[in-house]
Length: 403
Ligand code: SDX
Image 1 (cartoon, rainbow, N blue to C red):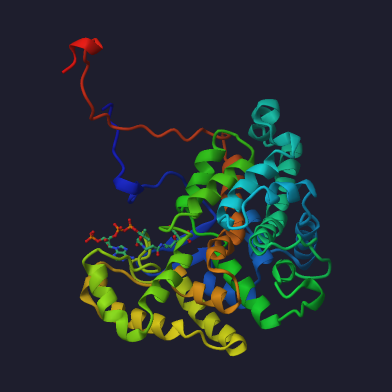
Image 2 (cartoon, rainbow, N blue to C red):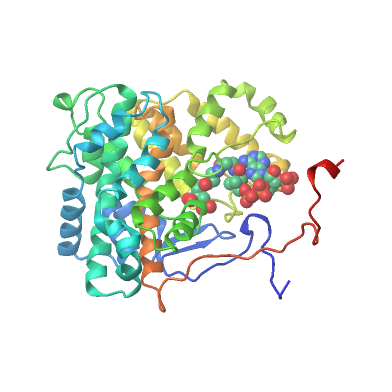
């Protein structure tokens, strides 16, 4: 086996690279973006400022922050051809399927995205022009992520598409485009806008989770970033990852009343059901984001009214946290356990919840992609090895001699 060391199943405890972006301490329940504790960023920062921090390594000055926001919002518009693209989906296509395709579609627009033409020279030199193109691609993808998501939403609703407005914040512009009461009646709600912006910031990055790893694995072949982001979006779609926020609400609806919680937990112990929103590969005490999401939920419920599922969620949380089956496996709520209750209270349709995870996570995916593109010595394609445990050499047997 040429001295190969096999990584445990699912890359358990396997580091594939060094990174300066996000730090997680799973035992202590710590999460920091470029050294700043997530609790401080959630309290004082906003999604685009945090995006700048994750991408470029420091908090922006007022001027840098203003310019970055203007640039991102400027790139919010998509070519009107995108309307035909979105109209090609059935009205009930899952929004994550539409968004995943839309990112790859975006790549078909931009000449520099054609790897055979320029992929080889564009990124590996780290030249000023490649930096300029890279940063424009980053602005395009962050700016258009909300617009593409809103277009997927309008397909689901059977409504016309909405041109991104001017004069609203990144999150405000997204809510405006999503507003199902019709844009002429849109009344900004600062509490809901701030709550969604905090949720975006909390979901912006999380080190080498499955979808970020997918983006790096894909981007390491020097394919364009639009295609690499489409790959990451496909990975996030899964119920073990970003699809969990949707799965949590379906779980709570299936449980119904709090008095049904004990029976549900027994079914989970018999492995007949999954306790979505609990457990994490890295956090073995608690996911620090879940506390912030829980607090944000209370802010939102003051405006929207409490969701009757909250009682069930709290009963489920309290019962699981006291149950030896879960505590012995170090299972605690992750970022997805409470977030769906907020999205539901804000009126988003259930299958749209993973999209609300993907939109902000575009920032983290791009921060890791940019770090890889600029790493010393240029990009190395990610090509792991395996330990072969199959058949030894065999001779071919003609079909009429096989039994
Ligand atoms: C996210 O990686 C990231 O950082 C992801 C994320 C991010 O920001 O990018 O944080 C976002 O994806 C959060 C996770 C959302 N997924 C869910 O909530 C789905 C439910 N959770 C599980 O599927 C699971 O906990 C995972 C996938 C999150 C983690 O799985 P691991 O690390 O592979 O753990 P495991 O499956 O080996 O579980 C260890 C034990 C097992 O028990 P035994 O078989 O050894 O007896 O815990 C059990 C598991 O059966 N277990 C659960 C459980 N999660 C793990 N049992 C019941 N319910 C669960 N949710």
